[in-house]
Length: 243
Ligand SMILES: *[C@@H]1O[C@H](CO)[C@@H](O)[C@H](O)[C@H]1NC(C)=O
Ligand SMILES: *[C@@H]1O[C@H](CO)[C@@H](O)[C@H](O)[C@H]1NC(C)=O
Ligand SMILES: *[C@@H]1O[C@H](CO)[C@@H](O)[C@H](O)[C@H]1NC(C)=O
Ligand SMILES: *[C@@H]1O[C@H](CO)[C@@H](O)[C@H](O)[C@H]1NC(C)=O
Ligand SMILES: *[C@@H]1O[C@H](CO)[C@@H](O)[C@H](O)[C@H]1NC(C)=O
Ligand SMILES: *[C@@H]1O[C@H](CO)[C@@H](O)[C@H](O)[C@H]1NC(C)=O
Image 1 (cartoon, rainbow, N blue to C red):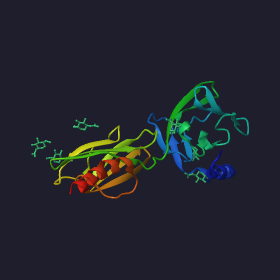
Image 2: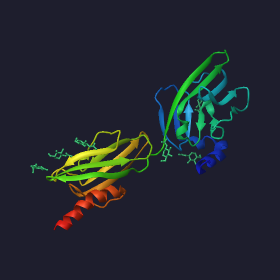
Image 3: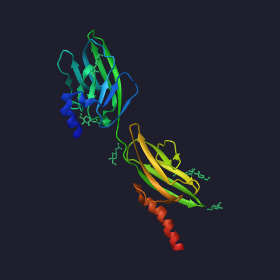
Image 4: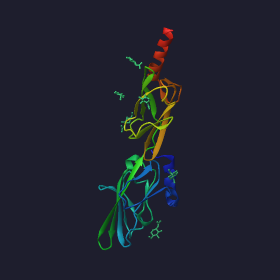
């Protein structure tokens, strides 16, 4: 269940703060902080008041991660999915090991002052998985009158990502919500390659297909070949038969 890194992290919890040098997140800000899954994160609240008698960290309003009565030597960690991955650090900092996508949330720190007054801080965290390499598929290459209609599609399985296509002369499309590139090219303006880049706020990946003429694919890595064979080879075979 737990990754190697996490085991190490757990073993090292006694040796804090070395375990948690990674990402420090200051409280009070309303913008979510973006981190990559697997990171070690420290959620920090600036300007913690001095005279408090209790700290509570929540994952969500109804899921309390820990509670610390300052007259107690140690915080109490509740039996949640965080139990073995979190540690209360200095100044109320919440250290989380090996964050996962499901850890994304607006965390809440409640501070109970000696006066009985309670303060609350909200600290948003958004965790992204690294984007895998996309598959690029040739959906259509149709040559007509020396011009070629091209439809290329770029796909990453069930992740929300943005797509950008690049060619010889830079970006071809603005960021697309769908990965489909639908263009018409002629021998004067085709690109020798079409690269699809997929990205989320924390990572990016890409795959490229190559063309040897405006309507003819070259061998390339990562292409889903089935439609390409159908689309490119069938006209070629027909061409050979007609000679
Ligand atoms: C998180 O901490 C653990 C233990 O300290 C370490 O093994 C791991 O590499 C860290 N992860 C990252 C992404 O730094
Ligand atoms: C905790 O807060 C005190 C006072 O603001 C500061 O001097 C100290 O460096 C802080 N410790 C950490 C680990 O941030
Ligand atoms: C392009 O092809 C169409 C039929 O497919 C034809 O009617 C037209 O004249 C052609 N245009 C040129 C410029 O060759
Ligand atoms: C992601 O894809 C896998 C397999 O294709 C599927 O089982 C799973 O339900 C999908 N998850 C989401 C969130 O769409
Ligand atoms: C591709 O673009 C052409 C012209 O803009 C449009 O007619 C066609 O429907 C588009 N095809 C797809 C699959 O989006
Ligand atoms: C290439 O040139 C043709 C004809 O001028 C034009 O219709 C097409 O949009 C151009 N394609 C690209 C990708 O610039």
